Length: 433
Image (cartoon, rainbow, N blue to C red; front, side, top):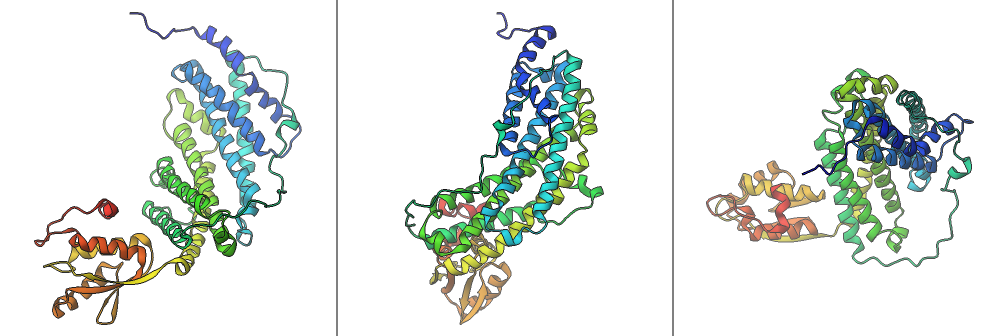
């Protein structure tokens, strides 16, 4: 049986590459025209043309061919910088709408400097693209792009707001849920060890990619994107949003957090894929000669991650404040774990449950309050409960936590009378993860 894949010669492929690369190569001529400030529309066009050409090259397995491999890596690198430049330009354009004007500080100045580095990198990569194209035998086009095609499409003007605001059902619960989700992102961030400060240049390679990489950034992005979707679905354009200006500010923290994470993701991809790992045929060293990888690491850690930390912490202060207003507080009387009381396993589950929501919950024994999110505090209360022979105790705090605690108590806090672990209902599955 004959193979369905037809092998063509490098000479025949050159003819195809000549045809498919012309729009992309015109960008080189545009970049060498009169220097101007590039817009999001330009970066979007650059990314689109890079992806088109990269897709063509991948369809023909160009990066499995020694002759064409480097050309493909250059195109992919340009695509990367087109994406990060677009993201950063978007942040700069939209920053006034994030309601964080008083916190701009040096961020906007540093962002402009980073964007200038991206522009220089794109130009340097195109210079190498020209050299490589000529080596391969690709003829450069004579035309360029029209400036008019890239006028900024984000004006500092807006239509009057005329859409009726929608009433939000159970708005208090939704804000509390959103704030709790935000705190879970903070915990994941801390778990990854990303809540660090600025790092000396000589130590950057100890951080990326051992601690900071595109896989972890994608995981965080998914969580933050979910936050944004929850806000936009339930809170945006509601009377609740108008009545509490802090909510729009929270939306701003979520947005800038998401975009900076995207910046980390794409730069980590570039570093890991095109410079850090040993590429065949010495390509890694060729790309590194064009783009200083220490600059990339510096931007990842000392710009993007630094400001992610900065805005995340300020957002954390805000959501803690919001929880104080939007949390429904109640008191439940719940049974003590049968036979063994609040020993390590049930105490750990209660503490994990209380911590999961990020709100204050107290275990009350004889009028004394114990922190329900602390295993040590619960086990201290357990001694008093055992001595007094109490069969029930009081829990006071966030009603969402109390509802889950009530369900947990119905399953005897996850163990049988001998202290063996038992199954929990699906609603409490997060306690075993």
